Length: 512
Image (cartoon, rainbow, N blue to C red):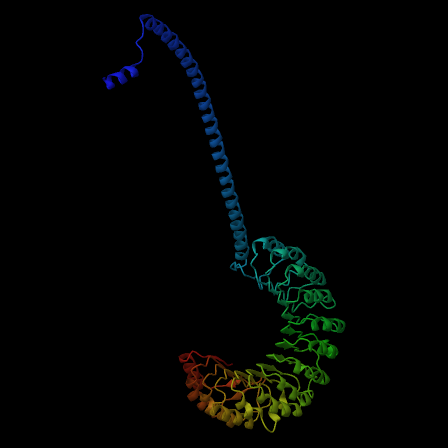
């Protein structure tokens, strides 16, 4: 049996008749017709789908385009806004620059310097309007513009823009009580204020209490200057407890207020709380003998005091005899100014013992105290204990030959190597041999820059034999810059010699 042939016949199936063939063709025609109709319907729907898709695509493209445009517009707006801000800032700073240039000044983001510029109320108003562009200002100096009194109210409301301000100088501005009032009200805008100078405004008497109270509330103040502000005794009495609360105060200047002396006891008690005090200036404040003693009781509370100015208190004479020892509390003292205090002989004797113990002293001014030259143990002989001394002023002190001998020996022993300024003017009592001693030893003062040996205005005196020592030794002073010789009469030859040497050494000489 042919197996393969049998399987082939089964796969091919039964053999069809002619009728089956005719019927099959008819069915295939119907089927093809139906398929054609279905195809046409499907094609129609596919066309609609295609149009819809096209519409959707166009819609999506429009939405994307719109979104893109919106984003671009938004981006443009941001850039435009940033540019406008930059333009505003640059315009504002241009205004600041233009304002400063009107007064021959340069604009600085940290410092406004309009000192002595003849400012008016109009200028103060304009400066106030510029403060939104001065956000980083730390120092403002409007001093010596006496036409702006009464106009601070045009500026202080804008202090909220300058909260970084640390230094405010309004000295000699013709300020009034209204000015101090508006300034006090605006202090909360400048909480970092450390330095306030209201000096030389002599209409402020009786108007400062509220201002000072606000300064206490700020709590940062380190320097207060009220020189010549016409403070009354009542001002001092109310001022004292306020100052006592300024725990960070380092500099206090009440000079030229003559009523301070009458209330010095109250002030001293409060100043004991100011342990940071580094500078105290009480020049011409009506101090008397007892005032000095009251004041000296507080010296021990100021371990960091560097400068003490008690000058021009003519009634203070006699107060230093017992108080001088208290100066030894000032281990850091660099400046002591007690000129024109009518010192007694006891005062000078006590100071001669104490001053050499102030090892950090750099500036000593005892001028216009005629008893200095009468001391049996002159101060000059003890200057060797002050190695940092840079300036000594003993003009108008009736110095004698012994004084110059002490100075010469201290110089030759190299104890005054740092001395730069020496004022010996108005000592008409010095004999020629004393001047010779000075100029023989002066080359030892190798760092001296200024020397004044002028005579009193009413005096006229010929140069003695000491002139030859001056001529020969002045060229040996490499740092010398100024020489005062007023009222000394020089011959034509002497004048020519001195001029030639001073020109060669670039020394400015002052003589009649």
